[in-house]
Image (spheres, rainbow, N blue to C red):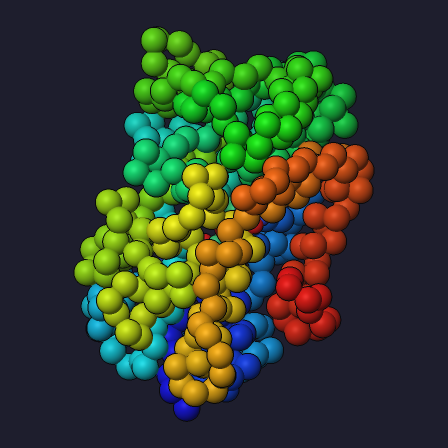
Length: 388
Ligand SMILES: Cc1cc2nc3c(=O)[nH]c(=O)nc-3n(C[C@H](O)[C@H](O)[C@H](O)COP(=O)(O)OP(=O)(O)OC[C@H]3O[C@@H](n4cnc5c(N)ncnc54)[C@H](O)[C@@H]3O)c2cc1C
């Protein structure tokens, strides 16, 4: 059987490995962490509603459940006919390569004074610890924000920041100390969250007022300081603890190699996820440059569609499937169950509609249920629901 190497053991890479194994390909997943970090449910680490162990799936367990090989290793360069590991080893032992190594974050001046909940998994734990230390002090100022990448608009990741902010607000209320804390939201774009549609913007505005959250938007971020955020025009947001998610940037292993890539370092693919002008390399998930409408966003569910398509498209090339190759473009939509600690809202956007459905109480439990479903179904312990 043909050998497929998947680089990256995240949401996209693991879905690809699972579906490639269904065609009995010889599959190896190479990843720098020995667990899959389920980012969508990691938002609850900050408020200790989930432990770190609840948010990971060991790759060894997935490897046993689906019969792929797992190798721990860090890729430092990806080229059109090989890839290099951190220890200098150059590998060409594959018939197909699937690149699924996610994205980097843009580096802002003073970023070390902030915590990102979307970067290295351990940072969420550090944020939780710092938040608790501040709560012990009895009062403080909290800032939450996200940035943009002018070279890749779809690489903005704002949803999780809103989710963590609303969860922290609720956490402080439950502890009866919310009045002792100032919360400020900031973002350089004038209407952050606008790609979710007008109704989402209105609801966000309403929530900010109801929860007494200050909002400063449309101001460029100059730098982060130990005690706050310096914006253009000399405006300073005082903050004892800043949670900030920079926009995504191309992965260093892609940037240092010769795969076709955009100015920002995202891999150029066709609609079937095949890397432009290369026959046996595919790329999926956050590491690719997305085609499609202005409001497009990089999300886990799209990463999974790409992964399943790639397994099918490779099987088609090998004569194991009949029909036409599958494209990801028709599946571009935004589907976001935004958690607020004690409820949530379901935001959906496609070419025709932008809907926001408030889901008090039940929204929170739906997201919790999804997390459990995700882990158990990936491990093959429960059957999959169609399309999920
Ligand atoms: C906090 C948060 C909440 C989110 N919530 C949602 C949500 O509710 N709904 C939704 O649809 N999407 C959500 N997303 C987006 C979603 O998680 C991503 O789109 C998805 O994880 C992308 O999958 P990926 O496999 O491309 O990247 P990742 O999940 O980032 O996986 C990349 C993998 O590659 C590995 N890797 C990285 N560098 C190397 C290297 N040099 N060598 C070897 N391996 C490497 C990493 O260890 C990782 O396993 C959220 C994201 C975050 C951060």
